[in-house]
Length: 466
Ligand code: BGC
Image 1: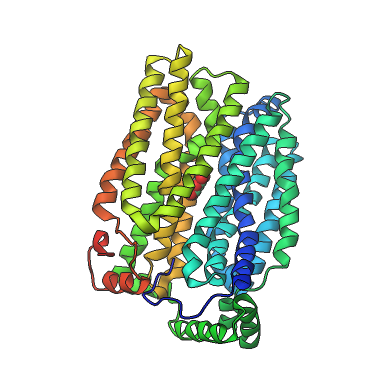
Image 2: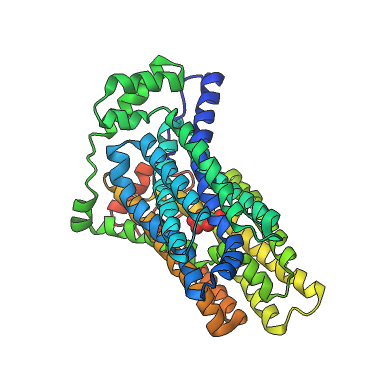
């Protein structure tokens, strides 16, 4: 999110504003795809596992396969967005989503399911890297934060839709139908992405100045403004991307890389994805019936969508850190109470509802804070010359941590039991509060240039924004 001190000098044409919004919504459909692929698996595991007699480890790798692919996608995203451009990287992501999702729905073995989940994951990693980049390059400066958050919002909507459709098919155990629900929109989105305009910034990088001017003029509906923005891009492009060199030679850059990795590790170790992938299984531990498990999971998905609006609407007003503190404290407390309830036994309806309430508070706490805000801060703390590498590394770290949690959760649950597993996550979130205090800067109302200046002059990480 780029918030420089200047304010827009020109009056923005409402038609141009709507056009940009429309383009951003279309591109954000990639987030919807990611969300659906994250959400679908919680419904598929049980019926698929029963049909193929899958072991716990096999189930974990059906979850993990997607994350292996996502790590590969996130780490290659930088190269691909540079070579093919943002638009065709997005289209490639949609192709991976489509082929992977059809393959999953047609799976005849555990191995085929895992391989196709890797393909879906590659779409996810590419999309996680290229969509926010595309949005930030197409949107006007004043819209940029909101447009980047739109991606996370659509992701949560995708998760909710998948949870909802899982519930719909749950009683018949029709896991292939659950997966087909992801495959069909993937094809539609692929076609839609082909009609998106190229990013003007990428056209400039490639030296295609005429096309950049044409595209920017269409996006802004004001030739003078288009000229001005392209000139600014041209000036910025004088700063060459030299992330690898910086990594070797500049210890301050290593600090911002470390911070980006830490933020994403904190996000994943909060434990959100144990709920996203395994909510029905957790609810089963709390003695919910099969049908109740699925509908409660859909409710959890809805809370995830609604609470994301808090970050979208208030992180630029209240600041990132107060919201993050509130999120981590509520996540730590709800996980601790859930652990206690599972230890005590959820024997009555009121105790079951209390357990559900704790999961809802946990998901709400995440959705309003770490869910969107870790992505926002990660996009703000890297210096211009190392931004692409920095974001690629923090996104890869997110996927790897996600992989670690996703592929070990069921085994840990079986090994140490429900209560101890949730105590562990309560502990991770409590540590998160301390790490927030020690290392995380408040970046609200601070320009990216100021953050960079302070980083490079050795100011402590937590004070980068002050
Ligand atoms: C996280 C994902 C998670 C999603 C849930 C994102 O910010 O990176 O791992 O599944 O939020 O809404």
